Image (cartoon, rainbow over all chains, first blue to last red; front, side, top):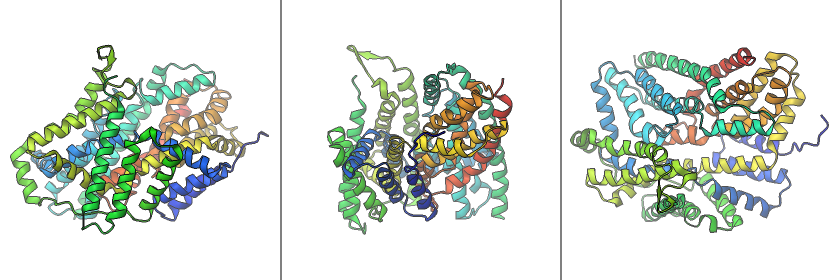
Amino acid sequence: METTVNLWPLLGVAVIILGFALRAHPVLVVIAACAVTGIAAAMPVDQLLATLGTAFIKTRNLPLILLLPIAAIGLLERHGLREHAQASIARIRSATTGRLLIVYLAIREISAAFGLTSIGGHPNMVRPLIAPMAEGAAEVRYPNVPQEMRYRIRAMAAATDNVGLFFGEDIFVAFGAIVLMQTILHGEGLDVDPLHMALWGIPTAVCAFIIHSWRLYRFDAQIARRVK
Amino acid sequence: MILKLDYFFYVLGAMLLMVAWMALRDQRNPKRYSSALFWALYAVVYLAGEQLPPIAAGLLMVVMALIAGFGGVTLGRYGDRSDEERRSSAQRLGHKLLIPALLIPITTVIGSTLFKDVKWDGLFLLDPKNLTLVSLGCGSLFAVATACWLTRSTPMQAMRESRRLIDHLGWAVVLPHMLAVLGLLFTEAGMGKAVAHVVTSYINMDIRLVAVAVYCIGMALFTIIMGNGFAAFPVMAGGVGIPVLVGVYHANPAVMAAIGMFSAYCGTLMTPMAANFNIVPAALLELPDKNAVVKMQVGTALPLLLVNISLLYFLMNM
């Protein structure tokens, strides 16, 4: 293949890998990668700044999902929402951290598969409800859960939300990823029915549920071992 | 349309401006001037928006990154309530506390399904292009109003609480935004072609299993680098999926596409570059290790990637 492909932009990737390996501040790594990629692609400084600026304005809808619910959630936390979530789970005797998160995984994945991706999410579900409940379920069984284990439980709650969302939403026919795949394949001369792509996603979605549930099931045993 | 996304940009801009103002007046914040400047600049992005000249917006982003990168965004004092106070108020309000919290997802779902085609005077009620975000915005406003009414608090208190949460997030708020910018820049600089060239030139794909593995692992690796499966898919499908898997091994394109995208998602679970899924939650849950969520997910993502390779290998000719 003797085409002239410009390999210099790969330097931007090198900056990212190096930056994260050296544990530099992520924001600085990103801005350095922007600079290096721009220079490697032979962009003049003013053009690079303009490209960054245009993209910065264009992508500003991204933080809305995170920041708009924050006022309500913050106010409810001040009045004990997290404490209430913990107290409610404590009343259910059979609840453990792992079982609770398996139920949440199932709800999250199935609702996402029907296109209801806004049920759940980190700012409005995991922080105020799911993570405190997962911690609360461990607390009921073991009076003093070490701080390090609490952090692991919270991280697992966030991970469960992500796994459920990712592997659920992609079997919903009208989801953006399916539309994107169809558009790209169409551009390459392949016409694929979106419904088929959604259906062929189901085996992976089922495996994702089994693998993550198995880990959650074993997570309870890990908590028990760590506490003793 | 009647309710535009722009209105919520203004709401967020006003919120950030308040955060900046409160940061400026907080004597307990050791770096109150640089913190206030950071949030004020971010407010400009939402209030001025497209009126901002591109070069100015670019400079603004660089200045914000430098302030955040050199530790200029710090915590202040928030007048937190004690554990006892919160516990007794939780007992008093009980399940009522859940109503505003659940109002956000419920309004979003109803808005983006039932109100999709609702028109008022010939105009769409909700911006059809940004249906979910506009519905989420409405849900958030309903939730604040209900929460204020339930807890007998003022909207000002809600602002103070927003500031507490936004400050705890700190620079993690802008990281996903800046990574999205980097992703667009990568695309513009021709990163996709460069990676596809490297992958296809140096690996021999005469063995079916190797070709399948290269496609799936390449999808995951490229997503780890770019932080976004949508950026990886066109590159790997165009570079390996279509010419090799479909072209040489006669794979069913639907299987190739579906499992390919899921392999990319395995990459998303393993990268700090997908900041809004992996770094922001760590900040939201106040974890000291910002990579704690990524580390937790590797245990699910790696076995799942192996599952994807075998599923694609066995299912692709069906």
